Length: 181
Image (cartoon, rainbow, N blue to C red):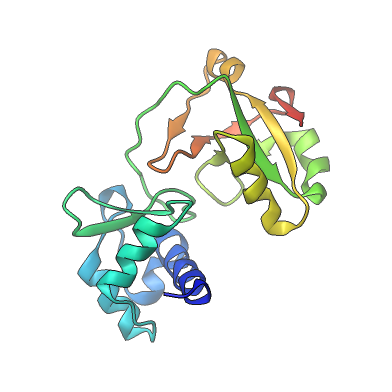
């Protein structure tokens, strides 16, 4: 599958597994899961034909590991980033001492005032390394990298979760726990 097709299909799956499953007739099950056969049929019924091998390539070959199959490969879900109500059944985890967040310069005034907010998603997303945060922030131009004092946040009682693809999730990060790199 070429890069353009891969990107188009990944965006289509992200839209419907994270934000609007009902738009193609899907209903997310507990944990955000949906049957693979159900997903492929819904995609085809809405003009987006995806083969099982293409879906596997999107799940296994995606550098951000946005999607995951269950242990037996019969269900799929988005790892995080949902705006629809879903309990991903994540377990609280102890974060590393620092985590990173990539953002656009235009967002900095609000972040300096209010910290990182989850906005219309379930969590704030934090990266385990600077390089990943830089890639995330670069989606909207030249990125600004913020360093989060995750150890201090955790000590203060903030609950962290690590999603299946290594992204760290929190409800918010107050500005006093952030510094620009």
